[in-house]
Image (cartoon, rainbow, N blue to C red):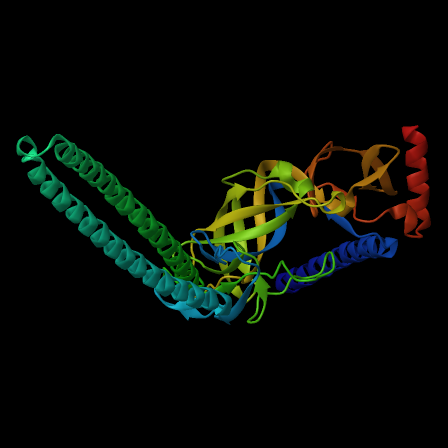
Length: 429
């Protein structure tokens, strides 16, 4: 009998427990139904570390890039005759770029012809100089011989009549004058001949200089790789393109100006990402900040880096931007110059702060507020906005775990929410 009563008692307790659980479950279901029926999505105020980031797009480049530029030839535009493809592997000494050398080869042939002609002129000038010098020396030797004969004849003056002796003295003086004159003429002829030779040699040297310049220009118009790496063609900035249009890469047959970069070979052991960032984010960036890097062609691999340098702001007023270089700490052999990357630069991390999704904060009449959930609906509550990003806001004036609306409940069409919002506004006034 006692066992029977015990079983009946246990059954009654079990039924009571199930009934109580059923009532609690029904109440919970009714609560959920009210929240769902309101049509207002909610979220809770969270506490934690909030990183603030700047997103940007860029492309890969080698930090120690070897730039191959069009040489200074003193002429006009240079036509590209040979150009390696972007991404093509080249080794030290391989030809990467070759320009059209037709004009310089023509100048070289002309200069070489001028050198040959100038050489003939030098040889002719030397031959003429030598002939004139020999002629002048012969005349001087003959005059000296005549002087010697006149002097020998003058030695007999004591034995000759006075008139004859006087004639001999005059003959000696005339011979001496002739010797002196021919001696001066010889020196002048040698000097004049040497001057003529010098002029012809200067003309030859000038032609040789022109030929050497043309040869150097021809040699400089073949650009070779100094290191092993992958070729990256540069953009054609000399074409006729509309403002804002995409600048294509240089191609064989394009003309480039002297000094213009044609191709670059990045250092395979040192990579960096170059990103163009809008001016509004400049104040948040600093050298040394960390960045996450995703290569578009390799989405499964994550790379890390730090800001290496921040360039100057450029561009028109409606498109002010600056270039930022980010070093890559963990490069891999698969990287290639020119690959597109997505960057996420961490500018600051606020520790243990209250934060909400950005869409939970509203603004009106220079006030920032949220809609907090209460028993009768939602109430406006002013908050202090400490800092915001595109997706998160750090706030003060709320409690951790407090529920807030993600949409304006006054615009959801729920009557209770609208009434509560109006009452809250009246109460705040």
